[in-house]
Picture 1 (cartoon, rainbow, N blue to C red):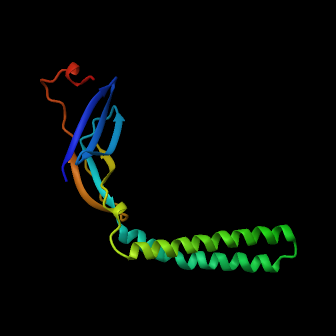
Picture 2 (cartoon, helix red, strand yellow; picture 1 turned 45 degrees about the vertical axis):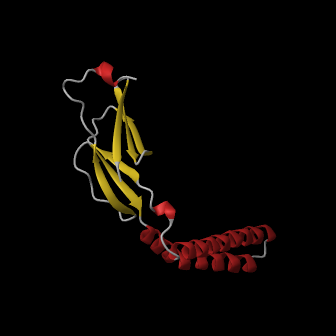
Picture 3 (cartoon, rainbow, N blue to C red; picture 1 turned 120 degrees about the horizontal axis):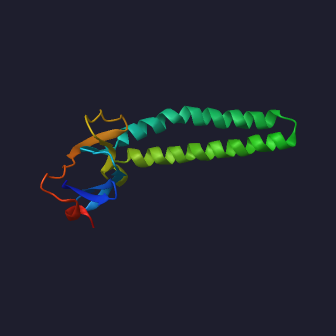
Length: 152
């Protein structure tokens, strides 16, 4: 992966764009002097584990709403719980489909790098839902540079 940093002066602020192989993966406009950008990818394993952990909750929720819709005597309340049960069952079906898709192998949406954060100092640890790719150094302007060279 080839990273490129583009800096442009915008008034008193600086626009920093990070490109990876010619595609913009992050952008920040700020007066802060950012020195580094943390580049990550999403973790397919983390997302898959979260989906699997959510199965019991969504199943229990659908069953609870279904039970309440049958217990209540008031037709409006019963109808509302029936609608909620339907939504919970649809969410469970969507999770099952997502789990099957993610279990089938690497997915393209998890291959795309992105800038997770910009930093003026030390770069923090990567979050569990991310996979570390790189820390991109954002160059400072050289002392010989003039502001006019950076305005566009």
